[in-house]
Image 1: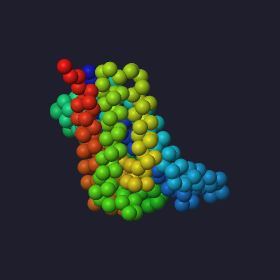
Image 2: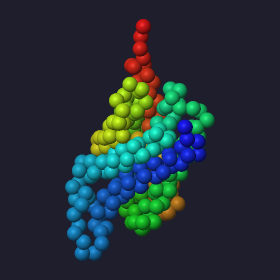
Image 3: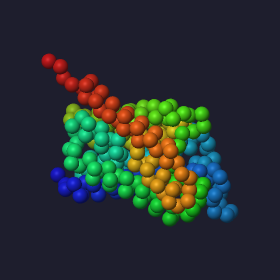
Image 4: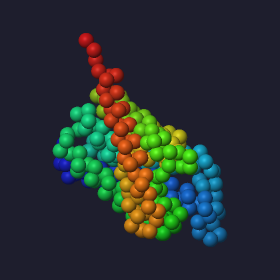
Length: 248
């Protein structure tokens, strides 16, 4: 097994890739939809699709990034790239306590670096128009509703992880594809409800970037993206263990 330093570095890089490509797609969608494209360019893109088409595109960006990371880093760190996943695996004794803090710290750092890198590449429009891809409940969605939505989305994700990546009887080679597609589906559905974070680190990075670069201060919503994903992931892990437990 790789050292905790190497595994944590894999988590940092994996979370960077997830946030860079996933939130990058969200930022560019917003910028295109508001006409922030180079002069005389052909202004047609995912922003022109509107509604569900945008969320499908963003969901696929996240999903494909996760798929690539799982195949690249799965054998090194397990490719959690999500504090909720790390805590859920720890809760069901599938992950050692001593590695929880290094993994979560690496995930948060990776997400934050990705947000600042996007701001550097895309300019302040990524902050002022794209909000660095930060998540927040949409109009008409209350705090409790948002927590429930995030919990359900992460519950589904964690069930998939338990079934195709953690379970020793799972057929090999499919984890990256199935988990990536699950994330894409969840984002397509929950995008217009909560922004579909299902990952506390994915929300933390853009929130910190927005705060430090003069964008919106959305920290009042952060408990949604902490409580919902963690609760949903832990419940799914325990439920899967219960359902798959052999009886005499």
